[in-house]
Length: 279
Ligand code: SF4
Ligand code: SF4
Image 1: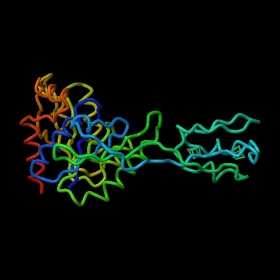
Image 2: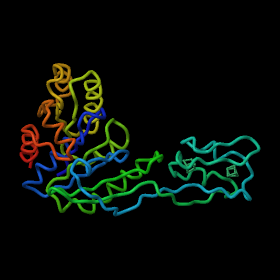
Image 3: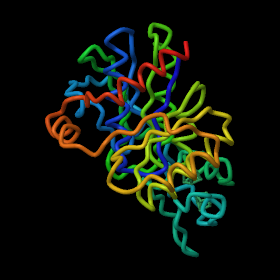
Image 4: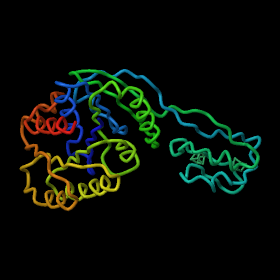
């Protein structure tokens, strides 16, 4: 069964909750933790798991043959990513980092002056520790097309997930394409938030998205106690999402975080029990 740990806002403790939940479930079940926050994966650090590279993610990039190019500029006109710069009378310049590899420029070029090359943009890792199997994607620094890495991660997930009782997916923060892609096929999503104005705002965004995707949602209120939770509870009620647990703002949580240990608090145990109750 796939469970997602997600959140509209970064820095609310999403990875802390995902790793702690995976660790707790792994005491009784076979658990795969998927770190789909490919811009900044850190679940392996929280669980002190050494990762090994199992795949390299590439994208197709255009290569210009200046001898064939007539400098017409058609390639720049069709590029939706603004990855081609063309000044009248000059050869076009391709910005690799900006390019999504869609191939439109290659099809549009009237003289076949644009060929293809392959560029390494990320990696897929696996690892194991504390009873948890980890699958983790990572986008290379300065690359922008993270969806390629998320898609490669999902292909790896499909190959191995039947061997596990639970798959816990730690998504990126926000409501963008990578988050939507990572939420595919999940039976329940925990939206992690905190009792702050930003937390409230971003919680409504992620609950709205989960509603549109028809994914049942529950709220995990992290750092409970730093401010009254009325706003969070009002938003959760508006979207029909129960506040499943409140994780208190405590020294114990910070100590575990700084020592690279999974957080072991009653709220996480209760969260794991709720997940087990769904089977
Ligand atoms: S492959 Fe697509 S994104 Fe890349 S430069 Fe060509 S048109 Fe633009
Ligand atoms: S479309 Fe082809 S010929 Fe025209 S500028 Fe681009 S590469 Fe050159």
